[in-house]
Image 1 (cartoon, rainbow, N blue to C red):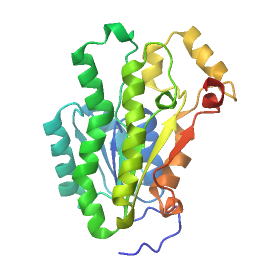
Image 2 (cartoon, helix red, strand yellow; image 1 turned 30 degrees about the horizontal axis):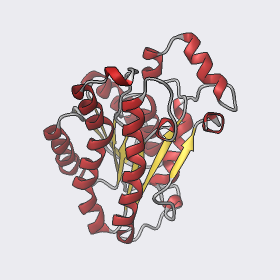
Image 3 (cartoon, rainbow, N blue to C red; image 1 turned 90 degrees about the horizontal axis):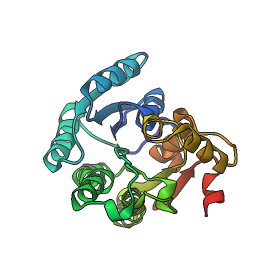
Image 4 (cartoon, rainbow, N blue to C red; image 1 turned 60 degrees about the horizontal axis):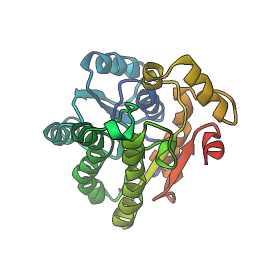
Amino acid sequence: MKYTGTPFDLTGRVALITGGSKGLGLAMARIFVEAGAGVFLCSRHAAELETAAASLREGASAPIEWMEADMTDRAQVRQLAAAAMERMGRVDILVNNAGANVPQPIEEVTDETWDEFLELNLSSAMRLTRALAPQMKERGWGRIIHITSILGFTSIPGRSTYSASKAGLLGLARAGALDLGTSGITVNCIAPGPFLTDLPGRVLSQEAKDRFAARTAVNRWGRPEEISGAALLLASDAGSYITGSTLVVDGGALTRML
């Protein structure tokens, strides 16, 4: 089916967003809904998902659904892919946004911690891509977006597991672009820098927050909605010739850190 809308129009498309109940995931969901897409949200928190879905349905022109699922559980990842297909009929846009970061010195990282965060931050993205790419190929159109981090390019103390998993997404996008490009599917990453979402709000002191802000070119943290333009570009026909790439959205932080 050839898409004939305007470049940023997502009318008729369906997006699955993991970690979609708040923060960057919800901000991306909102811009997709405004562009006309249906959205299927996932996270580990049912109450947050219900609230997020209700807010998105106000003024939406397409269905908004959700499912509670734990991306560290392989069976639940499979169930999520199946449920999205059954309830929405298709998935055109996959945003692998679920992830977590617990600072820890490398010598204290246990096998259990390593396995858990690699499963959440990296392996779940591979499994959802593998599950949903075939039906995208059948239609000759698809968009897969992995949410990595500027810490996939560089790092800071205590982020060995996070940086390793986020760097893995960069390679997964490059390989996926080669495997799927002739089928009309693009695979890219967005690498956020300091965005003031719940995660840094929980783990960082105010001193640390100020220090991160000072590392950016704009001397502030990003607002969640400021990731929306990058997401819409890569999810739409406007980004049809962008694949295997990473769009850094960091207020210029990476220019100071490298």
